[in-house]
Image (cartoon, rainbow, N blue to C red; front, side, top):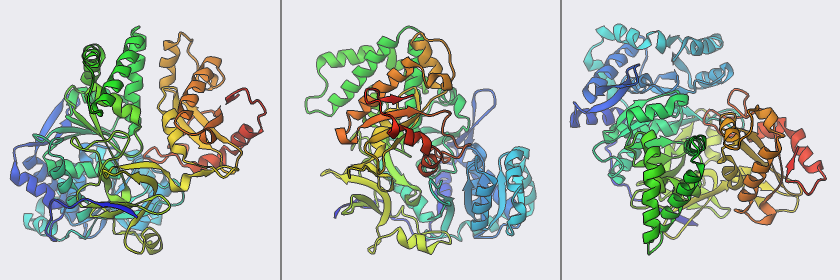
Amino acid sequence: MNEVHAPQLVELPPTYNTNKVLTDRVAADPAKHLMERPDGAGGWTPVTAREFDAQVVAVAKGLVARGVQPGDSVAIMSATRYEWALLDFAIWAAGAVTVPIYETSSAEQVEWICGDAKVTLVLAETAEHAETVSEVHDALGDLREILVITDGAVETLVADGSGVEDAEIERRRAIAGLDDVATIIYTSGTTGRPKGVELSHRNFASLAVNAVKDNPEVFADGGRTLLFIPMAHVFARFIHVLAVAAGTTTGHWGDTTTLVDQLGSFKPTFILAVPRVFEKVYNTAEQTAAAGGKVKIFHWAARTGIAYSRALDTASGPSLGLRIQHKIADRLVFSKLRARLGGKAKYAVSGGGPLGERLGHFYRGLGIIILEGYGLTESTAPATVNKPDAQKIGSVGPALPGCGMAIADDGEVLLKGHGIFGAYHNNPEATAESFTADGWFRTGDLGEIDDRGFLTITGRKKEIIVTAGGKNVAPSVLEDRIRAHVLVSQCIVVGDNKPFIGAMITLDAEGLPGWLKMHGKPAMSTDEARTDPDVLAALDQVVQRANNAVSKAESIRKYTVIPGDLTIENGYLTPKQSVRRAAVLKDFDPEVERLYADRNKDSLHLV
């Protein structure tokens, strides 16, 4: 078995916990800006480490006054915002366990999570979220009350806790040790009911402290980052703790429709995002260039940046001519795009799905190095990540300090280390099934480790398609390439037990208008565009380019554009934007069957 282990750089004492991450930061530099809050006028108001800690203590007192006991589960149902961070650390300071709930969750999902975790208090962002919880309140015997953030929940807790002594919070902050449960995060669940992943204080604190030690360049002078992906997701949650450990100044923004403006206002030094965000930034820039009659210049600059980045990985490096072209591209295009992202970002961290080699090289050519990583909820997000001084674009990097990885005989990626969860809550059977006899966590992903210790993810074990001819096909290779196009929102590759590989594509309602304008076409709806000859011709090219990445037997022979889109609201996407493949295949089975009933071999698409 091919395996790699990275030695741990920092050993924490057994009494350490996430509360110490914050109090150590306060002790190191109490006047440093630890957070910044949006001021409502397009700017940001700083919050020092000392001020944030004082607010945490005040809110924790309110939780104590409200009857929260050490070990109780307290849920947060909210989009990403400053109060999420404040309440999370306050729950820990009260000795309790945080249970995040996506703000898009249904009443049924809320009932399952709160019931399974025995949640005693829910902190809901809005009255609408509180109403969702109220629908199932009667079925939740442990739930005592619901407080609404936008209706003054924080202020209420501070007022309620005015009579609680500081010593009580100091005592509670010290109760948990490294191996005690800090949070229960329920997996999004592409199939079946979500499982509650118990993550310990060790998982967060030890992994964060070691990651900071291992990447000093990324966090030079503390740095700045704007968190905008859901804090209910483990990726944002880990960065939220890591940022405190690093002394990073963190802002929070939950409205992705105004994200670019906020990046320009906040000016982060590193950006945390999922691949879809990086795709959208590229596509928006392309459309903006087209609207200004400069799309040819943009495409030339993009090709130049990618070529320049690729040349950086060669022994001779970029040629003189390429360096000159890159400087021109930087002046004409790249500098403007960096300014749109705040102008100070040198690094970005990508996770939650595969980024793709093309985008990795484009952004490095642009001047922003994307450090792609890999992990799951069960590994407290990152188990591997590329580093500024150890990078291989297209891979997800080497193991983080204190982490181990291996490839099983069937190609499955296995993980060990201080980031690996302890158990699924109330589910010993699932816990046992997830580990090998010698303690490796089975990720369900397929991958390869090269001779330098870099991991590359090649597919998802459970999503491998086996055609009627016995060919094994990893759908993500094709899906990721097709989804990167401005016209495409989602792509689902099909072909299990079928004679060839096919695909279902949905159009991107945001990207379509710009593409139509770019190509001199009148405005139309996504439903009208599904049968438009020019749109289909463009999609044909997209699919053909994706096919170049695989063998003929793995290539898409026919695709169809299905109506509407896959969304969280219609149940086809998880809150972290993963496709619920089983639900899609079940509901769109007639469309799949039409692909294989079509006798027109001259057409790549099915109308």
